[in-house]
Length: 117
Image 1 (tube, rainbow, N blue to C red):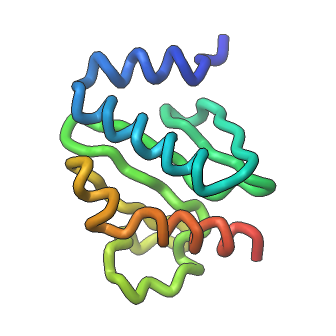
Image 2: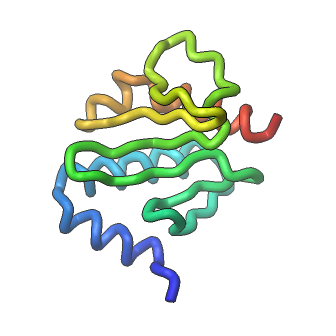
């Protein structure tokens, strides 16, 4: 049976309050930044769609990763994207201050644009 978003959120809370708070803050940011967003649990994380699937959020023991399936298309002038694969890139967040410090709202917009292209 497929896990619901709430079930995954409950599991993330068991991982740690920092991860839980980060995931919730990212979900709130995405819902405010995009008018119509859907969430689905896949690959052990939450995938976000706003007309197109543009990012996913995955919680780990030491950090939360925001993954961009079309991240290689993003012009990374800010220098926070990690990864060298053919298509994907990600940003690792370890604290709430990383959301602003690593310019996540900018990257979400760029990721959405890259996914639409």
